[in-house]
Image (cartoon, rainbow, N blue to C red; front, side, top):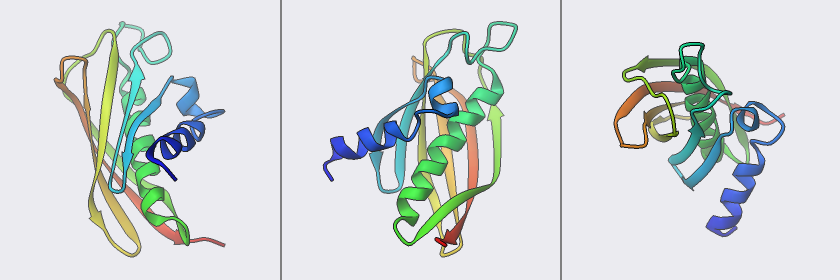
Length: 137
């Protein structure tokens, strides 16, 4: 597959689920690193007009899950075990961009760090996602 075909396949995986609902896009993918973005709009804001922390966590887990499954494929698949996030800076508009990078790749688990920044590149949220690696049925 070409890089463009990989991106198109990953983008299609967001259709019909939370990724599509929140307006997520995959903008770069390579083994061990995924980059995506999400709008800060009526779908992702909390009542005070700020990016909802849950939306940031949804972006982080989506990117970590995609990355983990890319590394596990084709014989295995990844499922989320744990995620945490620190919300560091409020965001009111525009887009946030997340970059997920593998920090541990074991035979039965993976750990990913996801850094989410605003349109100026300011760190807004940092997250760590752990995935269990399972054999396909």
